[in-house]
Length: 292
Image (cartoon, rainbow, N blue to C red):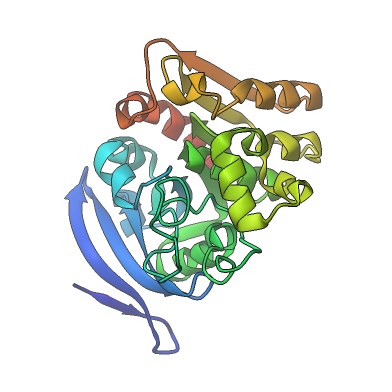
C-alpha cells in the first residue's frame, strides 16, 4: 500500500491495489471526498506511455449497483487503452457508508445509485453530489496526481453511467472532447428509474429534473462540436421495459442536428458481455478526438 501526499502534506490518495496489465498498471485508490463527505474509491489505468509523457484522460461512469470494480475487472478495456495511450478513470457510482436512513433499502436508489446528480433534498443533499464530484473534484484530483493532459478529457459510461456521461458532456460544452455510452438511460424524467431517483434527490418539482435529462439538455445544447456514439443491445430487457428510451434522445439530437451514431446490436443484452464486445470501438472513438 502506497500513500501519495499533496504538496500541503495532507494525505490525498491511498493506493489500494496495483496490477500490471498490458505493460501498463491498473490501480485502485481511495481518498476523502470533500464534495461527498465520505471516502471514495476509483480505478485508474495508466498505459505504458504515461511513464514518459502526459496522456489524455477518459472517464468511465458505471451503472446501478456497481462500484469501481465492475468496469476494471469485466470490461476488458485495458489492451485498447494501452495501445492508444489513454489514462482511464473509473470512479465509484455513489457515496457509501453515509449512515443515511434508507440508503440501503433498494438497489435503484441510495447506495450504488447516485445517478450523477447533485441532490437538493434532505437527507441526500450533503453527500449525494456525484455530478460535482465527477465533473470538478475528481478531475482536479487526477490532474494533480497523475500524468494527464487536462486539456484532453472525454467521458463514457453504461446505463445510469451512460446517462451520467451524456449529461456531463451536454451540460459542459467544450469540456469533453467526445462522449459515448452503452445502453444509457436517455430520458430519465419519463422512466421509472429516473422518476424514483429524481423525486428522491431533487424533489417533486419536475421542472428541476430536466437539468439532468439528456433528451432535454440536447434541445438547448449550444452546438459546440460533440460527436456522440451509443451502442444499445436489442435484447436488453431494460430497453423493452421502457427504462432507457433512446428513441426520444435520437429524435432530439436529429432535430438539433447534433451528430449521434446509434447502433442497435442484435442479440445483445444489458450486461458486461455486451460492453466487452464493443469496448474497443468506444476506446477508438475517443482516441480519435483525444489524440488528434
